[in-house]
Length: 266
Length: 335
Image (tube, rainbow over all chains, first blue to last red):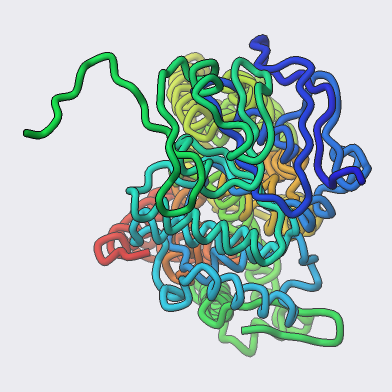
């Protein structure tokens, strides 16, 4: 069975700078796919192309068998959501109002607020644990709370596929885990999740499908336990490491070697 | 607050609704006051009689030929400036991104002055103003284009263009003969004095044509305020929406300037005042338009009556009234 979302033979470029050529990926349905790789490997560019933010110079992204750009934009927005790396909080907006904006693709000029809209927003705020913040001004929230609010907005969109561009950037470790746990919950409830992450250990822990990239190419793909080896990490990140088992999750845990000998505590 | 009727539903914020109704009432009150008071007082019942064509000849002349067209022009021009300001402040995500700050009104003034010097009739002056506004907008847009237009770049380029055009306007005044210079100078301060139905009608037509467009792009524009990617992810077709909004905003400020001259501060202050009163997030088009109408007509009333018989240009009062009120609101700002 062909997956709902895939990119075939993509050439991705910004102006003159070509980021990737002949890149093909498919996102397994109902997976939690994590795209990982060193800085400037093209992982965010690939995600943007999959979300139709960037038009491929060659090749095409397919959603449910159709070329994604041939579908009406609102139609795509009812099937596929994206949490961009950075969005702008409108001045003075409350949490409830921001989350409600996630319903835009389901609304029309003369159908601005249906009962389904109401239910979706309530459920999205509950799932992300922001219900008590409903009347707060978004600008006044902490970084972790704000990221949960953006996630709630994406959830209110009620798309079966949700793409996240580095959802944990700018968050401290506790909030990173909180956001990733939330993503895992969403995956468990039946959504296909695709995220670009920086932290290889977090990727190994949460992903059911890993796409490892370098220089615009996919070097390895599959379940983290099957693909992550010291050889791959050296190839991709130019880092020598040991791999042990994560005592919490049993997934691969990368322990980097340092060129300095670290003094053991006496 | 939600209004549902079968498959239709509208989402209304009670506070926005209350502010809208209040602004409408104030606009009516100001209009009645402006038509009724003055050197020759026309009592309110006589105004209705005169409008129905059953008043005394004097009252009829004063109401239908002198005062009503001036008030109507003020309401329409104010609404057009407020709407245009709201559009550009939303697109640039910046309160300074108003047509009176990024050169559009100054460019319209340049076009107007050139026509005054060339000895054109009022219609030519208006046409010159509209053309000047559109040309300036195209140039500012082209100069700030780098594979897309970013708000802050548009504002910076626009402020530069504004300075250049103001200099050009001053220069043109020194080159004109004394009579043309006097006419142009009077027009430059922005004024509603002597405005008749022929000034009101073009603005009314522009508003009638552009209001539906504005209503249509209002919701997608709110999404674009969150960033292009965020809006696209929600299914907004960003480029066509932005192009339509820019076209509407440029035409509105051009037509308004053509009718009343480059009145300052209405486009800047109206959206900010409206937003603080309604406490709604981002920029709202309807309340900004109403606020513009109220601000301009109220200012014009003050300009006519405050130091009567000395008549102040309305632009002086819009800056003073709008500025003072905005400063007052900013002082206790939370929104």
